[in-house]
Image (cartoon, rainbow, N blue to C red; front, side):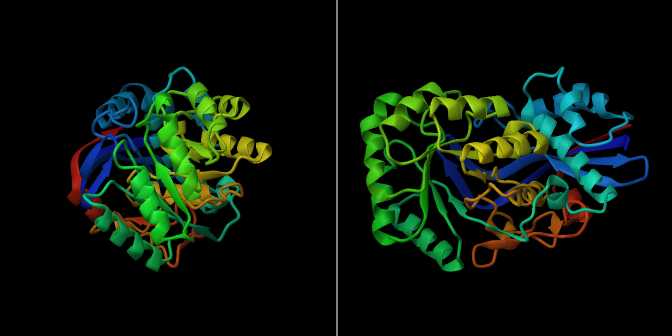
Length: 368
């Protein structure tokens, strides 16, 4: 294929309810939607998961646009690409900026799947017809509100409940949830809110039979997590620390993690995500697909990735209506009894509603 035209759009979508983590509260989601077109007129979509500000990592919506416009799109336009895996090689001269790279690589995977008459899941080597999904719940105003939310999601059939924690909103929260829901799979996500000096506090979480505690320590750390894991029975899951296959290898060899959360944007795209998945499968390390408050396009890519065999833990890919009054895809993503049916049509399997996209668009630019 040859990519002959790329359009970047800045979209802004209001969340149905505020979403609070240890690093901030979100009421709107600003993101980039990238539309790529090849010489045959096939159109593919990718989504940047970078936030408006550098809370999660160093990338932002503006830096992603800059990297795409000034470096990544010029490396792609009118180049012969036989397979999306080649995009990794084309982008080797550009260090890091994984979310920007993933944005355009995802669109190229979408085009490739359509050209080869495969669903994106099939193009990646996935075999599942449906995937198990969990729910991610932000920090609430009270324990009562949290319990009420969890009750609702358990009733809807979600297979795992992930709860954000931070100092002062942790042990009592997990104790209450375990008492109320003794048989539900529950995990705690700290988003790097603790330090190794908090080991005594974190050890208290071992009493609650949690599926995992996600990224308790610094976002760039592996070594301290290895020290902490030796002192906890609850599995540590790494998120922000893993940006590549090499990071995953080092973390596993050091004993810093027993589970890895694979986020497509964080690791630079579907090709690298697949490499991490394959390595973890060989090492007996289960993986799951994390969420970044994606619209339907990013959600579709997550669904496709989760069809790979070692995604054995439910991910964060909940129904579209969990977050949005109206998503940008048709049909919207729907979870029923904790499962999402994997689309079988070529490409991402969902139609992007361009009228809805335009209604959310703040800015756009086309490159040829």
